[in-house]
Image (cartoon, rainbow, N blue to C red; front, top):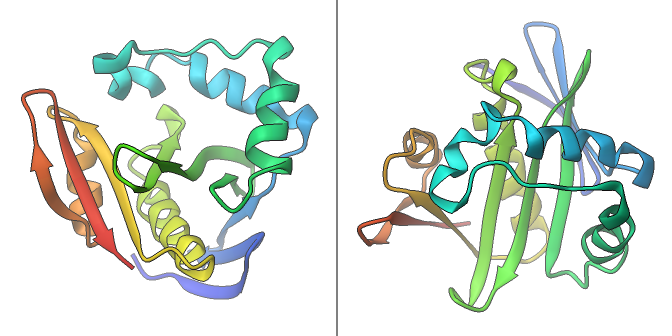
Length: 173
C-alpha cells in the first residue's frame, strides 16, 4: 500500500491512503473506554491466548493506568490510539522492559479492522515515534503461533531468539 505522510509530530502523525486518514491520538482519560473494549474483545485478544487472552480493564483502574502511561511516562512509555475517519481502530505503545534491557513494542488492532493495513502502518508509526524519542532498538515477544510475526518481519524486525512459547523479534531503528 502506498501512504502519503502529511505530517509527523510526536503526538500527531497523519497518513492518507485512498482517502482514509490514520491519526495517532493521545487519549483522554474519558476515552479509556476504547482500551477497555479492545482488551475485552475475544477476537481481538485471541493473539494473547498464550498469556491469558482478554484482559480486564475496569474503570477503577483507568486513573492509575492513565497517570502511569500518559501523564508520568518518564520517556520510558509511549501510548497512542490509532484513529481513522470513523473512529478508533487500535492502539500502539512501547515501554521499557528490564528483561530485554530495552523497549518492547505493542500494536493491537480491533479484530474487525484487521487486514486493512492498520497494523503495518501502526507499527511503522510506532517505530518512527520511538526513533524520534531517541530509542535505537525495539523488541517484541510474540507467541510462537501468532500470525502477527509476519507483520513484524515485513516491517524490518528480525528474530533475535525463540523459546518453545515465543519468538523475540528485534528492530534497529
